[in-house]
Length: 285
Image (cartoon, rainbow, N blue to C red):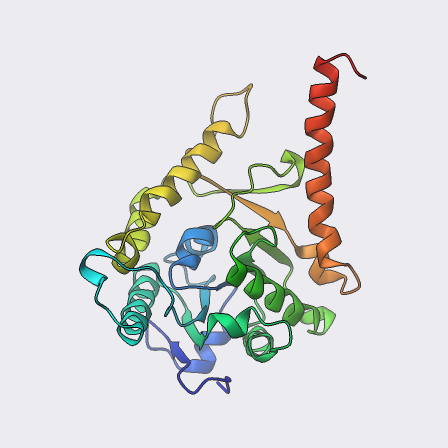
């Protein structure tokens, strides 16, 4: 593949030729950092796991150099941490049976730069090569600036594709801000119950982050359990693990739609719901 960084890599766990690996992808995850795919796009990984008719492809956009580190990783240099995180991502791709794993090796500061188009160009190239049915990426209300940089570049890249080559479904997923606040009617509720062992295996690969000071493994599955339990207050649970997503398909289908306005509409609905409930109880309606 002709990607911007000479250090970018394409890894195919089962050793298939590059072109064959790319064109079989049906579900594509586009994440900022090593581990984001496993935390946010597990629904796609699970839907494709151990199947021949569906394949998950992963894209990690940044090099992982800026990650926090303590414990056994406290003395690692940025270069050492980048190598460790890259290998962890390869391992996760092998465990998850990914069709392909692409690591673009961009720096976070370029991903966050409004005038740098390298990431958007790389993503457009990958999207044209894979033409997935479903894309998972960060949600535009995420609080991590690099995640925002990635989702904006991903949306821009998809909107530049010919209409007939755009994904049928695009989902913005939870990492650095959950989506419990979305109106239930607008939530994309992704049931990943019953495969806690696979989730734990994938999450646990990222020891540089877990032993390095962040228990993402516990927090990720804990959030999914909380989503399942607190999803419906007047019914028993029908799932034990839920991931919430924001439907970004309309933003991709209609390139004239304002990305900010789309997200703010959801926030306004949340605000209106809070106001309505309080006003009703206070007798102000």
